[in-house]
Amino acid sequence: MILRVLILFLCSTGAWGQQLLSNGHFTQGVSPWDNPSHTPQWLSNDGHHQPGAISFSDNFNNGGSIYMYSEKIPVIPNYHYLLGTSYKYPSSATPAYMNMIVEWYDANDVNVATWPWHTIFDMSQPDTWLDFDGEVSNEYGGGVFARVVLTLQTQSSGTANNEARYDDVLFYQDTVFMTDFE
Image (cartoon, rainbow, N blue to C red; front, side, top):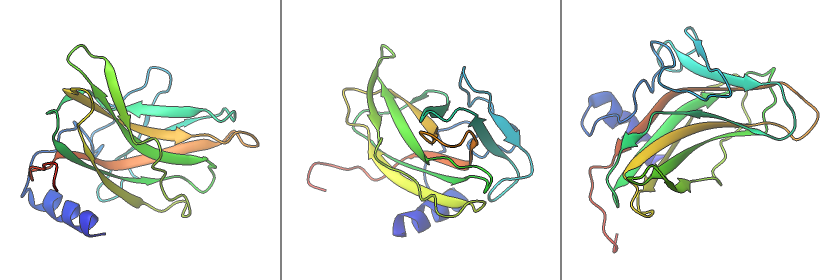
């Protein structure tokens, strides 16, 4: 909770680093967020704090995952990063879960790590914007680029109605230097 308040305060005041993602608030469409297999939709009237959100869906029910990718952004090895998003799903949809991950890439554009597959968002309140925030260290094999991935996991059986909505996707370099003893 304290981290969430700190992130919201710092983002609103501009008191710390720069938002590293392009168009994380989706106020003017969804570019550069993309997935070659699924076309995202821009929702001009359904943003969390301001107009604009990204929506993506699929009608298969085989327990598959749907991803929406940010652009790759330069990062510094062994630095700490803060991330967050607002998310929701319509009450008419029945996704298994949603989450947000970070993929780390080396100088040769090889994926050297993915974080965190185990974090699953609270899915108890359909039609309600909820917030997720977290932190991650770029300590994985020399990652010099990162990409934020928004996910939607479909049910393994029973329904073909899956949709995820995201807004206010944040990825900041933490300005507090961290060492082994912290």
